[in-house]
Length: 304
Image (cartoon, rainbow, N blue to C red; front, top):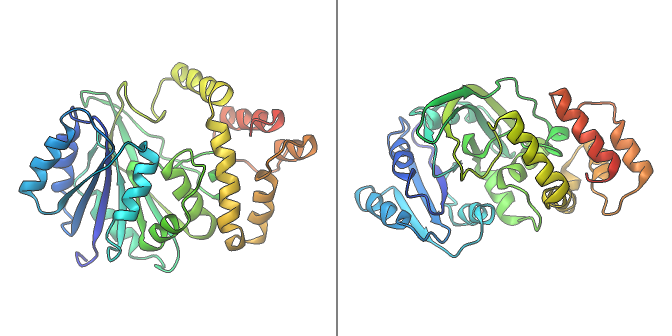
């Protein structure tokens, strides 16, 4: 099975504190046909020097130094730079630790899929603090479908592996608006491809003060984050932009049911009657009741 090449895509930015531990976990994967492609996004600390040391010792570690684009566009650049002859591509954060069989399990799952379709594999994860003390295991009961992908990214980027078809689609149709690179990937694969979930925890997900995403925060911090991003920040505008870009690129690839759903959401102007249709849509978007109520309120007031 090692004839299938996997490219691990890591975007770095001022990651000197934790990156060595993560690189060690990548190099020590049980699956060996791996290339580790790292794009530095304008680090000011010793991150580049650390990566160069690894690259000198391991020919499978490749470093690209770029200007600061932000982590979303940095990952899109990584997909563009990655070997077109590779079979699978894995998103990787700079501060986590991977279980040694993470890539091997992903390839085992994905080899059963149709390579002509965009395919996304994702696993579960465990939460750790900045010093790698175990906190908890992420909830195993995941809900994933195209309807869910419109309002939530349930597939965490650092747990994801995608096939060549997914890479090609993202590179060909880079969105103008995108809240997260992994969310865009999830929308593509759930809409007209395949999503595979492995409930085994294969990533030690480090939560610290500089973490970008919200997963694993306490209920109070999560509440504050939602208020800040949904009612003060621009996150919801980015989500709406995702819907519109997705419709531009992929509308014709959806089935009739999902075309109708996307038409309901990908509107540029608020319409009260459309908001009511979204608010009282008969099927669930989120698994937790509090999350479902939250998005329905956002639908009603025109924030989503």
